[in-house]
Image (cartoon, rainbow, N blue to C red; front, side, top):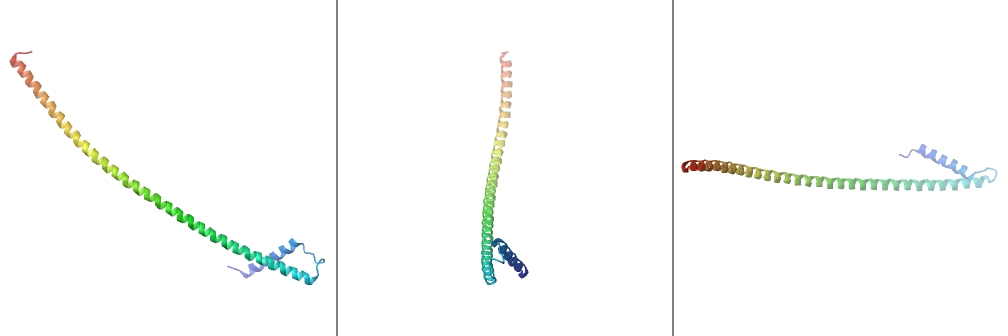
Length: 141
């Protein structure tokens, strides 16, 4: 991952940036002091870079942790919803079975009542016939 060429370029870019930021001027500082200043600034830039690398690693860890927590939360939610759907399906099947049982019982009662109605109508017809026959025998019109 760490390419020495890339790191070298980054260090050079950091040095150039530091020199630009401090508005380094050759005529204002003696050579020995220039070297010391550059070394100090390079060390500070290196420390900042290391601190940024640690911060980035920490942010990656936090991201991974959050991603894991979100995934776990979503999986738990999904499992809860699937369980609710399963329970609703079972409840619906029970209701359907109850309705089917009740419909069968009502159809049987309708059949019994229809037979009873037909028997009563037949009995009424027979009674009416007997009444009419009795009225003819008696002479009642």
